[in-house]
Each structure stands twice: as structure tokens, then as C-alpha cells.
Image (tube, rainbow over the protein chains, first blue to last red):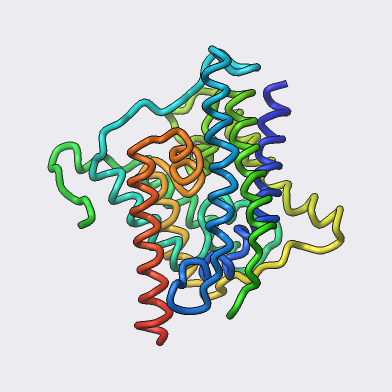
Length: 147
Length: 144
């Protein structure tokens, strides 16, 4: 049962990305282009998503001690703001602004088969692999955070 | 290139994304963060059960556009930058940055902000800022 819901969740997420326009890099890049052909649509995507997720998570974790088909909620517990978090986010933002894809839309758009997507996704996976195998430099040196 | 302002479709699509995040948490207890789920599939530290959930979620994501095509008769409308060098660099930066920073638009931007996580709020402000700056530089300073 949990497997079916895992696929279903991914499917609903993908439809959400397609309907919202988030899987179209042209719309993403225009959202990020405040001083050019600005398209504010994507603010509505994030607004709509948070408007459902925030009360949903709140209700779930209040009402239930565990998920329906699993033993516990895997919710991040860290509260420290470290250089790794901010430098990673800064690097991600640059890539997002260059290609107009973040990970979800890129995977959703992959079967459409645009040449740019077919290049982006494999290199995104390489980047993910590299990050998983990169030590946390900030832990020992306490530097590297973007200003 | 201009794109059409689509507040209602974007709001509705966003709400579907939220519904997906709540559904995954309710059934599997996992955060619907795409970079985390995707990179956990090939991380050696991932336990078998978590890897299975991640792989199935990503499979669902990959099936969305083909099902859309079968039902509607056409692929979703999109325009993707085609420069191989640009997309290589963009892919590497997105994959590395999102994973190194523990999350992307979905994990930090949607799920994290919804939990009121200070880490996620700061990460989202940071990647939004560098993304806006990147487009500003690429389109108006270099490309001007």
C-alpha cells in the first residue's frame, strides 16, 4: 500500500508542476527576471503549495503519532544554520537561474525529451553524487558561507 | 520571451504539489524534497526501505508527463534552454548545490517553510537571491 502511495505522490507532484507552469523553464526564468519580462506566476505556485502543506503537516503531526503505512514521521530536526546549508543554497540558486530547472521540474520534463533537459538531468545527478561524497568543509574551518 | 501570467493555474498546480507533500508524509512519513529523495536513491547510507520509497516517488514524477500526453494528446508546453555548455553547468550546480545545502525548492521552499524551519527559510531566501541575481546578470548585464 505504501508503495502505491509513494508512486501516487510523485505523480500528483508531477501534475502539479506541469499545471502550475513550473516545469517550463521559460516561465521560471521570467519569474526570476524582475527587471525584464517578469511573470509573477510562480509566486502563486509556492503560495498554493504552502497553503496546503502547512496546515496539512500541522494537522498530521497533531492528530497522528505515525504515518498510515510507516512507523514514524521522518522530519528534519536540525536547527543550526551552517555554512554548508547557505553555500549549497547559493550554488543551487545560480544553477536554477542559469537553466530555469530545479530538480523536480527537470525530472518531470525529462520524458518530454528536450535536448537541454537531456543534458541537464544527467549532470544534475552527477552533481548530487558529488555533493553526497563531498565532506563538510565548514565543520572544521567555519568559512565558505556566502555574504 | 514573454510568458503568459497564469495565477489560477499556478495556484491550483501549487496546491496539488502541497497535496502531494501531505500525502507522502501521511502515508510514508517522508518529506517530499526532490533533491533529497533523488540523491538518496544512490547514496550508500540510505536504508533499503527509504531507497524504495524515493525510487517510487521519482518514478511517479517521471510518469506524470507521459500520462499527461496520453490523456490530453500533447506534451506540456515548454521552452528549454538548448546550449549544451549552459545546461551542463546548470545541471551540475543545481544537483550539487541542492544536495550540499540539504534541499531545493520543494524540500526547503515548500516543506521546510511549511514547518516553519528557520534553516529552510534562510536557504530559500539564499537560493532565491542568487537565482534572481543570476538572471539579472545573464539577461541584463552580459546579455543586455
